[in-house]
Length: 179
Image (cartoon, rainbow, N blue to C red; front, side):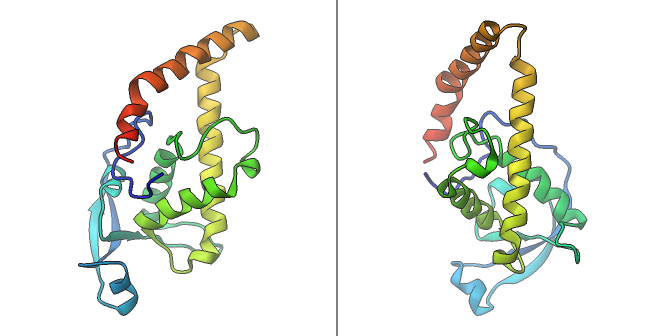
């Protein structure tokens, strides 16, 4: 599984086209230059969709004293996390509780997030970010349940089969070609 995703998940809803005014760390060569101080900070208008295609750049996420995301960077980050939660190859929906999702899956998601966003203290922010991602995944499961629930167990099962056939036959080939 690659961490270098450059497109939103194929089954995810379209990200809002609104732009957020955020600070972006830009460097010319590799990530080590960020550590060496060769990076520069710019202020840009960026949409959630544009975050997916960012290379050698990261959006700086602002937090308040309570450790919650704030300002436009918080809005962009929350919107983008909702998009990431739709990546069923990275974050499957066949679990009963977010706490039961394997650490491997959470670490892969964290690596993807860190490729796109910069945090002042990553170890401190990781718990909050993954908890928020878990909420977004739960919301996705709830939306799917409401869309495909039927009156009987048999009807619900048949509706889910149609949905999974749509995923397996139509959309995952595009994602797998990126890996």
